[in-house]
Image (tube, rainbow, N blue to C red; front, side):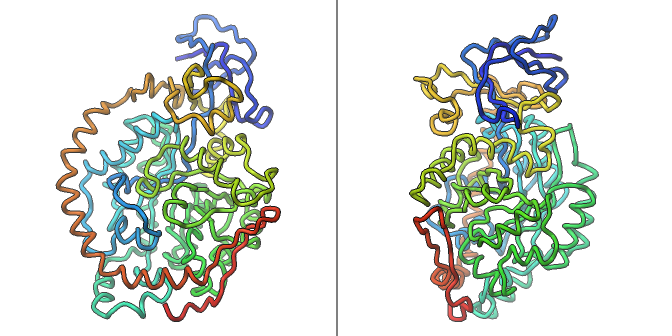
Amino acid sequence: MSTLIRGATIISMDRQRGAQPFIGDIFIRDGLIEEIADKIDVPDPDNIIEGADKLVIPGLVNAHLHSWEALFKGRYDNMPLELWMLRAYPVLALNPLFQRLIYLRTMIVGMESLKNGVTCLVDDVIEMPGQSLDALSAVFQAYDDVGIRANCSGHIMNKPYYQMIPHLKKLLPSSMLRKIEAEPIADTDSYLAFSREAISRFHNRSGRLRYVIAPSAPQRCTEELLLATNEMSRQFDIPYHIHVLETKVQAITGQEFYRKSLVHFLNDLAVLSNRSVLVHSVWVTDEDIALIASAGASVIHNPISNLKLGSGIAPFRKFLDAGINVGLGSDGICSNDTPRMFDVMHIAGLLHKVVTPDYRKWPSAEEILRAATIGGARSACIGESIGTLEVGKKADMVILNTRTLNFSPLNDVRNHLVYCENGSSIEKVFVNGDVVVEGRKVLRVDEEAILAELREYMPQFQKQYGEIERLNQEFQPYVERVYRSCSERAIGINRFAGDEREWVVENTDCKNP
């Protein structure tokens, strides 16, 4: 099949043009971009799309999300990460979800993503209380059916809950410790076997789906697991996706557990590389940034989630200045509460204007667009295939109508994309050269039927989950004591002098939470 897009405004995001718009034609054949030029003469293409008043951009890449949270959309507010996780990722009393509900949960993420111009996402799949191949199969099947490109993880943590947070063990009553110790914990060998089987079953499925190694975070995983998963990442040349320094508590955690920052700890383990994807990285020092840059690792910036959970503001400009590849992510669907990347771009474009009065260091629309496209693609280790509109790359692209309110009156289309657009101007979305969204409808699945089926399951699920939340609330007073103590000791400082965003840790012993 072939498609000719004729006379459109194009933002290619390639090395030559970046986000500079130009007028031209795009010819797609068998899922690949075969030619981009001022004018292309092709005899009898299967489809012709007239590009007048149309803007063509690379498909957006959501470089980090958690589909598990889709069932909790709109459920939580005004809680920092450590308290929020007691509800969104409870410690006790969870039973595995049945496959059909996992499929529907994943499908609503895929549908909303595609309808808002996301052609590729990285789903860090956390299945509580533990992941199975059947559960992961439901995730891959949903993304396969809806037609999106997706990297899906086997997310793993293998420490007891009380070992993940400083001083929590000594605060908890023995009865609560016994409850935690009764919960099963994954072991390294089992996870490696699981991942090998997942790679065999799902990796490169349909030419769009890939498996990702995802140790949860340094403080949640043993050194043995961190080393073994890094080796597997190297062996199969797939991303090493890990949460690092998201909150003030985690800033203290590194000092308490290892007497060094969590980035420094990972570097000393020799697990930082160009496959490493450090998610959040809010509370990094200048030394941490230098280590990340030296390793060639990527950072995923999740500005909306970081704001909603009160985690802080990541040093976006310092990352770029250090030459670090940066992608953008929505993060979880109840810490955002959507996978819409136009929202993420908008907030990312605005947020960093408040950290310094030096407006020359504020992010440009082009920098935001780069992070939302090729930056995310590179972090997913597929930048050679997607992320830009170039000859030989996959035809993952979005066509927007520039005669909508969002583009009227039309000035700089780059600014319109970051500050004006909300996804409503999208006319078509292509993945692998196939149209998967047209006229605000996903074409491969019945959206109304899927939503109707999901609604049937939700009352019973919400009732049962409410009981689980109540059981896990017994941990809250103890976690809150640690949170308050660590927050008092990790003090964020915005110094309005040349973007000198710094933070310091006072009294890092944190001995009396």
